[in-house]
Image (tube, rainbow, N blue to C red; front, side, top):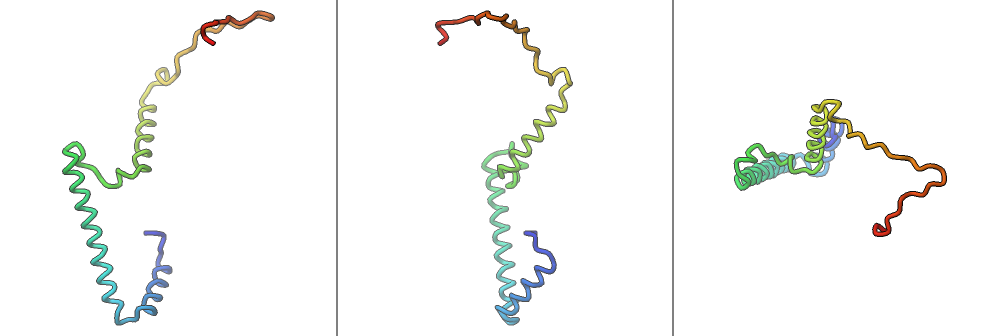
Length: 115
C-alpha cells in the first residue's frame, strides 16, 4: 500500500515514537483508527446512496467504476473483444472501386460549382 514496505514502516514508527513519545502514541493510534473507520463508513454510505438514487440498473456499481481511467480501460477492452469476435472477412474494409488514372497531359475533370 502506497509503496511502503517493512523497513519504511519501521522508520516511520521509530520517528513517531521519538516525536510523540511512548505515552501519547497509543492514543494517537486509536484516533487514527477511528478516523479511518469514519472515512470508510462515509464512503460506504455514499456508495449505497448513489446506488439507491440510480436505481436497480446500477445495483453492482462500485466507486472505482467512476474513475475515468477504469471506465476508458474497460470500454477499450470490450471493443477489442468485439473485434476479436468478428470474422476476418467482416474486419476487412470494403474494397474501393477501381480508380481510373489520368494519362500523360490529360487534365482532371473540373467542377466550377464545387470551388
